[in-house]
Every structure is written in structure tokens, then in C-alpha cells.
Length: 278
Image (cartoon, rainbow, N blue to C red; front, side):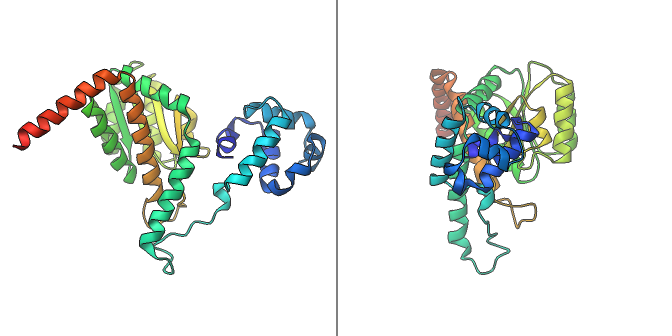
């Protein structure tokens, strides 16, 4: 179901209407035919079939089976109610925080696209210059990715200050890549830097929450995460956890682009840490 929602932005308006209708009426889809769904969604049978094919299915029959099985296993994130552990005084904050983190990691794992993350890793490891941009709590995740990549001798720079981001984005080209980490994908400063990077023909990789955003639209590779918080929140909790998990997955893929070299670099890092700790 999350994979279907991830590709929703690729659908036409009529096809989106069909998918929205099916999601809202998921409990009764097993009794529907293409014609009945088209009629109920005020569209054509052709739109129903096209929607199925754009979502990666051979036809409606394959889609219908997968849709029924998906809804038997997992609830759609938008239908689940999220309770902020700080703003809701009735919750046991410690246990609830961990439960929310487990839930968002499970959702993010379902969104993981192995081909996209492999593509992102190859771009990073081939790049002349690697920049990592984020704001607020997302910048903490940028620093985490920077530290990990440096351990395998892939030099990169994490920037969280808007002016520095614009300066660095001014002197890049098609040989370089910027990894943007933004939960909303709509932060003004991040969009400004991304547009500048696009003008300079640099590759753009974004880590954003599932949904439509300008950052995702202008990126070459998008890695989607899940986030339970709304716009008004006490702190970035589940969004940060899902971003950190995606960064770990991306780092692992980067290391595996040349695993023997990566292990040697990690061994060198370990020896030096051990040597100078003494």
C-alpha cells in the first residue's frame, strides 16, 4: 500500500481519483469490477486500467489481489492517528516514544526502494564533490552521514547554515552531488539551494517524507521516509529516526560499491583511533 502511495504522484488526475476512491473504500473492493469502480469514481474503465499499469501491475486483476493482501497486512499511515507524547499529557512518554519510533521504522522499511538507493550510492561514490544540506534537526542527520562517509574515505561536507549552502552550491557542476535531507521537502532555504544546484547541473539526491514536495520534484533520486508528526509538533522525533535509518541504508550501499576498499578504509580508521587513544 505504501508503494502504491509512493507512485501516486505519477498518476493523472483521473487515475488519482480512482486510487483515492479505492483507498477510502478498501473494505469493499473485493466485490468490485473495473466497470463498477470506474462508475463509482466518476471516471472511465480505461483510467482504472491505466492506473494499475502505472503502479507496476499487468492489469486490474493483479492490482486487485495485491491491494486486498496489502490492506489485510498494514494500515495506511494517513488513517492512523498519531499522538504527540509531549502535547498529549495522558501518554506514558517513554514507552510511547519508542512505540512511535518502531512504527515509523516499519513504515520506512516498506518504502525502501533498493534500485533508487543503489543509484544514489553510485552517484555519491563517483562524485568529485559531495555536499550534504539540511536545516534544524535534519542537519543532525546530515552530520551523521558526513561522519560515516568520511570513515570510508569519501570526503564530504555537511552544511546547515543557509548562506554557506548557497556559497557551496554556487561552485559545483555535473561532476558533483548534493544530498538534501528535509522532512517536508518544502523548507525555503533548502529549496533555494536545490534550485541553484539544478542550475549548475549538479546531481541532487533528496531524503524526504512520502508525499508531494518541490524538493522531490527537482531531485534526480528521491529516497522516501515515513513521518508521523504533523506541522505542529513538540520536536522532530519519528521524522529524525526514519531519516537516520535511511542514511544508514544509504551508507551501507555506498560501502558496498567497493566493499574491499571500504573495509580497508574502516580498518585504517580503527587503527588510528586506537593508536591515538593511547
